[in-house]
Image (cartoon, rainbow, N blue to C red):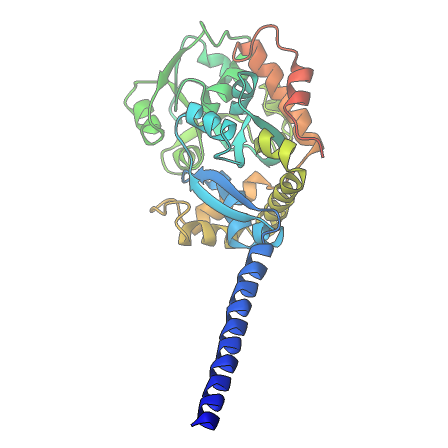
Amino acid sequence: MGKKRTKWMSFIVVAAAFTGFIGDTSVSKSHVQASSYKNGSITIPAKNGTICGAPNYIAYEKGFFKKNGLKADIVAKPANIGDLEAGFTNGKYDVLNGDFQYLPAIQNGAQILAAGGLHQGCIQVLVPKNSSIHSVKDLKGKSIGTPGQGSTGQYVATIALQHAKIDPKTGVTWKTYDFDLLAKATEKGQVDAISTVDPYAYQAVKEDHFRVIADNNNSSNSDKMAKMGMKKSGSCCYLYLSEKVVKEDPKKAAAIVKSYKEAAQWIDKHPAATADILLDKKYVAKTSFVDKKNVTALIKSYHFSLKHGSGKADLKYYAKELKKAGFLKSNTNVNKLVTDAYYQK
């Protein structure tokens, strides 16, 4: 009995040691997995169905965030800009891609910094093909439909009006409609023109027989569009970082920027594959019009690339235009505003 007891106890000790070894291995694996995200977690308010949000989705789906040590969570983008601002202030959100619409928000205290232009324009001012309006000058005294007051659609139309010597406050009437109702409002005679974002603008031209009056995607460097204030090769949308992250964790901020830069490069080289991912993963809702062919065409037209230096110059340009239109304070020092609001590597 003594020998059997000794053998049994020896077995228990060995089994316990083996169990402990397995336990240690499990902890080790967990530690290794955690260490692969050396720059921590980020939350991105990006899910809103837009094609120009592609860098968020591609950085996630193609592993650029993970490669750069970031564990990313992509969540719904608040419709209210105030909720978005609050999210960055309280640390709920870390990064965002959006247009120059955020300049007034930054002036009013939104805690975000621009880190570079991500792509060229996606907004157009349109009229029906049979309209008597043939230029921005013809918009004087007319009504323009946009997705909302302070929307980028209104900003782009405003810039065009200013360059045509039309006061955007008194020279036209602004009306607001949901994105999917803007073209119909024009067809019904409720407005004379619309200024809206893709894919609605693209669809209006391709399917609804609309003409382009102004296009803020001036990648062709058209002098005609430049005279309307549509900056040559100008960035429309930008990468914005949480000011809190930039100040408290510079390595994380640099990793975020690197991830978006790599994602933008990948998108520009693989527009069709990007369209597949956006549609298959339901980041963009597929319709009879919003299909692979049209999404690919739009992605190609945006010329995705993270531009740090020229992005800053573009942002200054738009800040000057928004100041002139009254969307920024009349005493705004544009150079200081953009310098203070720009991420320094």
